[in-house]
Length: 242
Image (cartoon, rainbow, N blue to C red; front, side, top):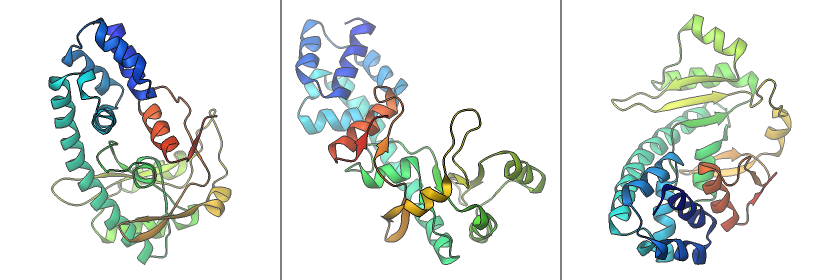
């Protein structure tokens, strides 16, 4: 199977077009290394493994590819357990300080549209807070061992960026981004006050926080992680495209 056909097969699986996937797989054998590499490049190996396993379609890519995708899924499961544990610890500290954050991106989606915590990779933890609560949020996390950039660099982030990076304590650290804005100059603007006003409850580890309102919007619904998030959300009736 050519690399082009491997890409077509992956796209057919992502789209749930099983007849097209069957036809491609019958045409010529799947090369496990090529297929897994494409999954890794698209950041969809765990979701593809879950999708193939749930649909009983493992034979489309063969045992070798499924084994490698399964090993990757196990690594993601272990990593996500650590990230979620640190997220729950941070959420507890923020809530105790009177700061109710909005969970963003992977942390939100993993708890809202995915059935299992190992179906989506979490790279870091993104939280949105009100601008006037930034000092209280940083102080609450630092009191629990989180680290923020030192004063000169911190001031630069606050003046010129829309988030402050922080790092969790422990021998294996987790990166956090504490956002007070979601706007990116010259690209788009978001009314954060309206977002906070319309945010809806989300429970994470028994902690009641918030998530963005309305349907999930994915800018590139057929590309990599965006496709995975969109398909997962659609299966839960919680998605639309722009």
